[in-house]
Image 1: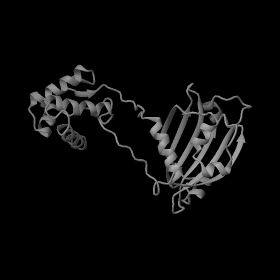
Image 2: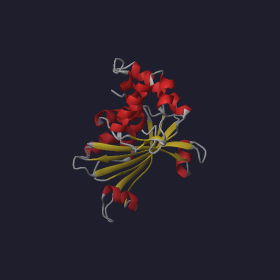
Image 3: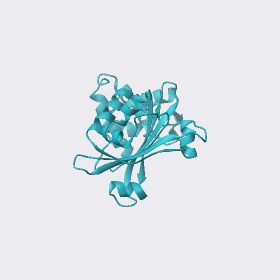
Image 4: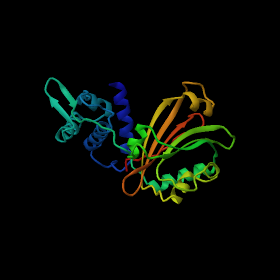
Length: 257
């Protein structure tokens, strides 16, 4: 509970420096508690701080703390039962962060222009069932499977890419993939991406990935999967990127406003 209170106090400092600085104290406290619940910082069915703990920690009156808690209860974010205290009733579920695809694609193009790209292999294959299902292909349809490694200007490999792309008919060979951003080659093939879904996780380096990135087997890597869809909502491109965190960082800036 002490760690939670400390985190909430930091959030309160941010609120008091922002647009809610002139709001009543109960509303500031309510806003901090609500955001912590909605973001999953205070998880479902966990016990909330008591009115006395809130009053003491945030240097407000018991009436102020009670009003903030009453507001949360009114929105059915918490339940308040005599003798049991207050518990979170809101169930947090992670929601995707949305951003402009155009800026993302420009960043990918810029990154590729400042990287040394080596195509390890390129082949036309019948994809495995897991890939075929995402691309909504029949068992007989083929895709272009490409494995690439990007290195920085010091020729240090930082990412291993494996991509599966449907609908490629021309201008997609080793020489072009090493000299031209892949997104540009896809556009030449009439594949205009209008949406990309991206999932970021972690993975242990294994086999060819470890060898190409010059890391130990089992080393921790940043794993990014992107699903690129066309204007009809069909996924036409799957790319898995495995990044060496010592040579690559993924940075985002987010704001409540």
